[in-house]
Length: 110
Image (cartoon, rainbow, N blue to C red; front, side, top):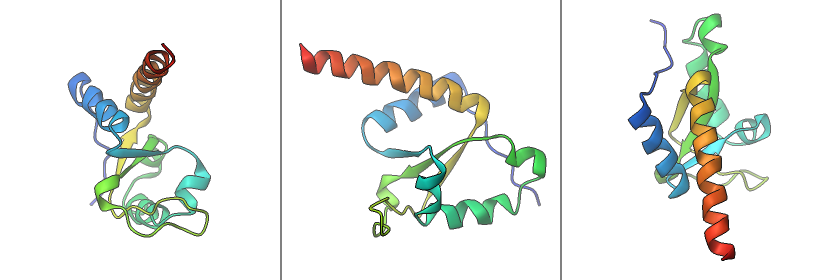
């Protein structure tokens, strides 16, 4: 059985952005953040169930804060639950997230 990365519609992507802004999800957006926490072990296990083509569709990995365990030696959180985001969805999610962060920073400055 092969694991397929789920696709999200616009409303679901917006909710992921809201969850990121509210601190419910953590973007494991660099290889270091993935490697140095337990999420790398979970991802490797899931990747073993993916086709080579599907592995190329990984765009972003989100850690779920409610499942966080002990921090790794470099203080990177270790998540018991992750969400794999398709590369096409992650573009939209990161664009929207960055817009919201800019807006929040502007409000804080004023």
